[in-house]
Length: 316
Image (cartoon, rainbow, N blue to C red; front, side, top):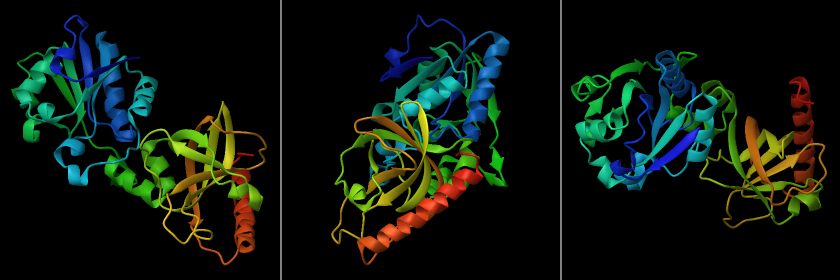
């Protein structure tokens, strides 16, 4: 899949003459609703013998339009989104840089500069997609701006267990550590990516050496607590227990939140490796213990619960 980053209408190449079916959206999470939009675009493109394209935007519009309440983290940062688009069969992804100038485009200017110029012949989007200054363009009035140059398909919301699938809901579920519902709405486990870095090696002293993961992007981190995870490193999928928090048993002052993974039945050096942490289930809240010994006892209990879970679910 080709990836093109655009910072102005001039970046849309006139020589890109292939007729296209374009899926429009921000697509944070590439959840089941987004997947339906993208698969619809891919299917139409295959039927018509056209190129399938995703046009998405970065950063999130709130960074430009609502800086006091801007979105600071993502379910799927751009690199992860691009990978998921490719898996869904998209030929080309355009990342349009969202800035003040872009936000001031009228609906007609957006259509002229970014769709018609791109040789878009069919547009696909969810029924909540808007475009142009003050979100004046939408999937109801898009024909008013098309200049009869393209058709469009509006994809309705996807519901799971009677609830609309949305990035906002999924973000909230991740933050609360409700990964059963997150996986149902995403259609896969939520994952973060990063590098294993050196920590204070306290886990090793306790008999539970951990991999301290420094995130490579601004992923959403769930609230403090202990979780069951899959830990992927160099093609290996390992079972783990992840602690998110500030280690209150040892620190009274405010310290940065860390993401540390104890990997079951593993011995080896993981430092500087690029890894993925896929979140499965929340075990418990973060706790402050009276002593290191009490913490070790609790961690032994966590280990037993984790082993039982992985065994029952065929992961061992």
